[in-house]
Length: 354
Image (cartoon, rainbow, N blue to C red; front, side, top):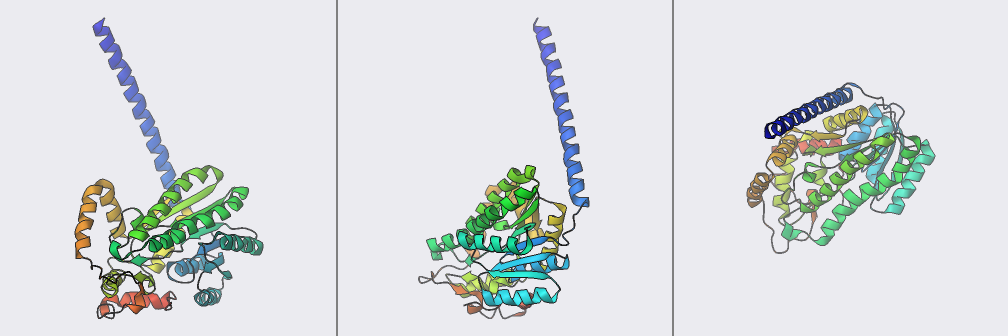
């Protein structure tokens, strides 16, 4: 009896293992087929209506430019009206049909007005790119609760407002694309960027959860995870603590060709990912390696970042005041080390903000 029981158990186990292997094989084949389709099939964006937040400068303007080159009809928005008008003129010069409207995406009522105006103008919104962001660089001792609130208001709540107000229009048509620009800082917390990382972690979680929830409704969601990019945005970012020293390391890093990806190249890759219906895109080899290291050995990665933190500037006693990057220049930021960053700032409309 015992031998029969053992034999039966072994037979059952063999069947179970075999069935599991078969299912795994089928799953792998299906996944591989889906991946191949996503990598080889693209849809045209010609004539599509694309709404891009934070699109007056930096990556947002680069995305709008690439969408214009694809024949899209554009709706652009930003808080600063002068830079928005400059962006509108540049996009019209490329031959794009553009609707530009000042909007503070942290205010739900303002976003509601924006979405209604875009739909009234174009009849629909085919693609939403949540790009608007803000950044404050400095050690924890220099940050205030207001810094965290501002980061969350823009990069989480702002994304939520636009998504929830655009989504019903897409659901009614049974199709649409939503692309959310998050950050490698939303995969692993970076020292001296705590408020930024906290908001990006929230944005990344929302984007990934949204992908799963609306896939059956014909709506595709892309989570974009960039590393450093040469957009010139550090000129208008906020720096706290020892602001000149903070701006020096950040500005040099954001300008370095091996560390930072060019804005135009990033925009082209993002638009291709939207056309392919991809669900996740990590931009830049440093970001890919950082995400891989954190995924494999999170504790070791955090320990390594604690060593990096010791090398970063400390906070003077009066370090809670914030300064724009262009107000924090030093010998390092005026040197050839930041030449590419200064060029990007000129190219992508990074006017000096107060």
